[in-house]
Length: 186
Image 1: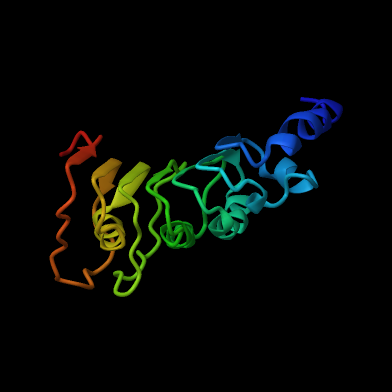
Image 2: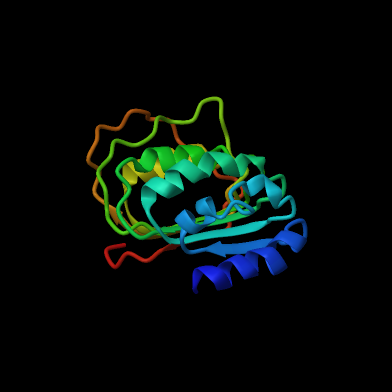
């Protein structure tokens, strides 16, 4: 899309109806930031579904904290174009979005970051969690500690554990009804 077409689109479609938009797919956050009428997510009070697709991971990381200003955001899909260097920050920030019910993350790599710490005081309301990338058992266990309301869980592939288990407590997921692993080793 040319710059003129995009500016016209912003002026005639997005700006007049930004309080009515409930779903948005952004494929380039740089354009979102550079477009003055679009740069603040809070200008979309009805936004419920947000897809960030083919965007640089550092832009997604910088953008995520601003999503807490969206009072109705219930679904978030993150599909970066490159590798995240600190995936823990991505999950930590996503788990802190207060009314989020659906989270899908499609990472381009398997990673070996040390997992987040087990959740003690913070819990997410996410009910449907999809990880479309490779994860270790440690990451799975830790992420589940943040998601006590989880009903549906889907993982692409589980990897062997890389870190010493830090907590021997069992997690109880009383709401979990659907579990899907796309791993041929299971």
